[in-house]
Length: 529
Image (cartoon, rainbow, N blue to C red):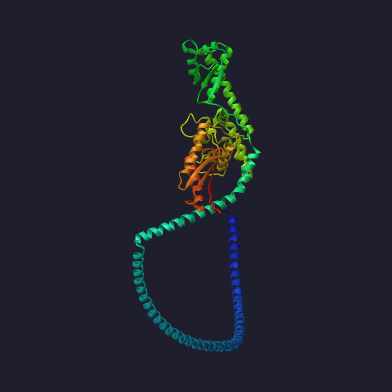
């Protein structure tokens, strides 16, 4: 570095120092100015603050004076209100005190009255005690008198107390029995009077609207044989053909001395029908041997089974019952070859179905459901020979397995009263069944059985005390009972009629209903001489 450069550097350094000194001096001057300004501002602020404090002090004095005035006014108002309320309270207290004083006077008067009543009650109690003692004494006298009179009565009548009680109870029993019979007679008369018109209209309407003929089928079938030679061919060599026929068909073939006839007997009507048709075709064909018998029987079985199904379909269509299970349709068709008391069960079931509908319509119930119950009520008769139990139980079990409605199940199982009725359709089926069975031409039975039933009616009626004669009349529909008027009263005659009817219901089986009529006749005869 040369001298020039050094001089230049020194000159620059001197300039910087001068600048720095000037800056420091300027800053000091600025600080002094600011310090003076601050002192001036503080002094002005103090003056302003003193003015504000003075103003606030003046306002506070004014506010305090105003508050004191307002407080005095409020105090005066409160004092006036307090004095006013105090005056009203005193007035109310005085009024309450007056009322209490008046009530106290009333209480004192009532106490006086109660005291008088107590004294009167004490006097009355004393008189009652005296009277009770007198009554007790009289009671003892009466008891002694009763004992004396009872002893005197025993001495006069000559009977003991037990005998007197027995005599009295006997008399009371006779009177009670007579009154009971009269009450029963009146109740039955009223019930019959009430029910007769309604039931007659419903039943007669049902019978008039539907009535059908019934065909009867026997338990045996006869097949005509054109000649004795054909009868021998039916029997076969040493009975070979007839044994094969009975084995294949499961029926009994009776060949006797009756000319031109062979009898086929079987409990199962369907099997009997198949056997009859098989035998007729064998006779027409002329070729009778075990192989041919089995072949024709198989063909006939298919045809008859088809006929059974068709008969069931026709019956359901005729009765307007839809939606039956195929098994039920088949069982309904089997009823065509089943009879009960000589009445064709299929025709009977169809008739019951329509009668159920008519009765249900009259009663405002479902006619379609009633027809279904009526058509199926005897379905158990189609297979009752194959299962244990009566046809109501068998039929109900079948319908239950095939998921029939509860109303149908109860009607099938309860139409003979075996189970309790749980729907209104069961008694309807019972009534329709009785109508169909009891109407003229519905059923037929053997003369021997008919006579036995009439005799049993007469024996039941004649077994009662006081009955002179009993007759079964109107084809067994009525039992006419003649009683001794000297032994049986009018009330007792009513009781005999009811008892006979109940015994007939409990001990006998019969179609329809039996009328029991008791006749009591009093004749007074005198002669003018």
